[in-house]
Amino acid sequence: MLKFSGSSVSGVITPPPSKSHTHRAFFLSALSSKKCMISNALNSQDTKSTLNAAAAIGAEVKRYCDRIRIHNEVPHVPQDVVDCENSGTTMRLFTGIASMFDSPVTITGDASLRSRPMGPLLDALTQMGVVCSSDSGKAPVTVRGPNLGGGVSIRGDISSQFISSLMMVAPMLPNTARIQIQGNLSSKPYVDITAHMMRRFGAQVLFGEGEICVHGGKGYRGCDITVPADMSSAAFPLVAGALGGSVAAKNMDMNDPQGDKRIVEIMKDAGAEVSVNNNEVTSSFGELKATDVNMNDIPDLFPIVAVLLSTAKGTSKLYGAPQLRFKESDRIKATVDMLRTLGADIIETDDGCVISGVRKLKGGNIEHHEDHRILMAAAVASLLCENEVTMKRSNCYDISYPLFLEHMKRLGLKVEV
Image 1 (cartoon, rainbow, N blue to C red):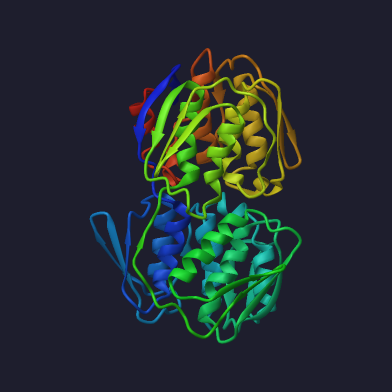
Image 2: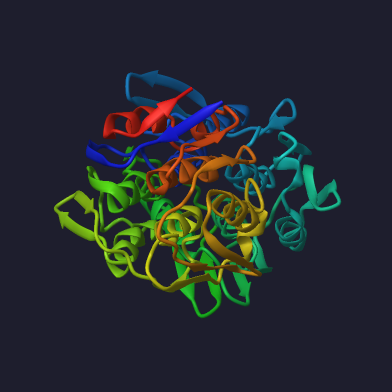
């Protein structure tokens, strides 16, 4: 059993490195002919899955304290099934990469991962000449190339990871890829991160009206990368500061393309005291007021923003993120159920929720569904509760924030395991 309680927090923390950057750095290094050194990489369950997948295509991985060197002279087809465990990012990015090989590659994961949709990505790869099979559009999936590149059309409103997958393999293909995006592109900042990282590794990526063009035939030249702090992880201690005290987060590069840096703007809009000094962000308690937030580009912030607004004066609406239904859990339902259990006045909608702020939450026993963002959001919500917040013991926070419990204890939250 995990128990969280407390009324205030204070202190300074350094958030974990960006999970999104780490995934991309590992895969792009594994596709480069040059030796690449990655500094400050996130060491988590999900990123270990990506490192294992990189090794499966021949990458030599060496660790030096807080640095990882990856070298792969010639990527080759995996010798066995690639198990991505619980990492949806690993599975989706690697599926595109695997399509470059002219032999079949099978990719799978745990029970949760095998429930997540892959159909739109497989349909897109089929348009590029790849033979794909799956379990009704879900893992395990098998792809057999070679992927020749060229024109491809894909929906943009289900997962940005599908778009990133097509982009990342494109420089390895003989023909330039022209990716037509049907409808709105959800979670666009993650595609921006992909493009930013690919350019660092020498790829040519161009954005047009409803189209992404990636030049093929040249591969990646490789480079050394320092991974920035993860804005989505930083949101948890920063919101804790806004709810009950004062918290400073270091190494916050506000010029980085991570969309989740919007947490700073959201907290300000909600009435929290927030300051940015160089690369340090400080959030402090303020009288919170309701605000509406379009979550389409920042779905990972949904659970913690809902917590932030649960006691804000007035009625808040979080909207625009139906893709949250297909995360580690149905993250809309899981967030609403969690906060309702704790005493919030919250209603589920198709693409988010409506929150009427209450004076105080009560506390209670919640279900986190082994979803790291639900667990961490509930822990922060305990600052608003009259009684403790309890839940089944789990280390699922290791997926993105391995030091979460340690950091929250350091800031003054009472944590019992």
